[in-house]
Image (cartoon, rainbow, N blue to C red; front, side):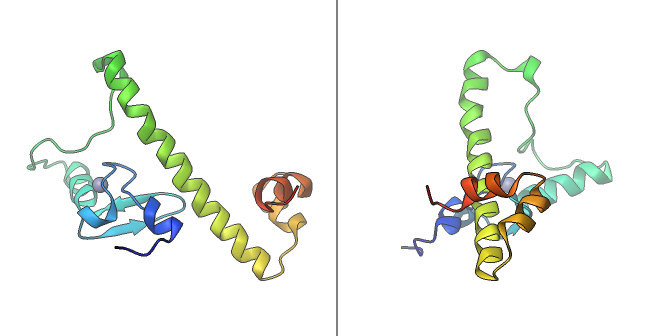
Length: 123
Ligand SMILES: [Zn+2]
């Protein structure tokens, strides 16, 4: 069983939603991840020479039924959760380094109080 690290459990490609255990590589960005397969597809699209079979694409709303849209929104929500977990880990590290809530708030363009309420875990 993989380690029960929260970030590891949440790590999925933000484009195709595959977990890191189902892809060769998963590259982390700021709150998002992209797998090697989606990088390859994106490269083909950028190069203008798509040769791979239809792969993961961003949905176009007009072509989707209500049920298809409803099945998609949990994926969007999981991206929010993944980004939130990533943000919390960065803030946690800044606090471990004794960076003040004021500076963290300024960086996030929120008040010191809002930063504390959102990330401290205290009441
Ligand atoms: Zn992917």
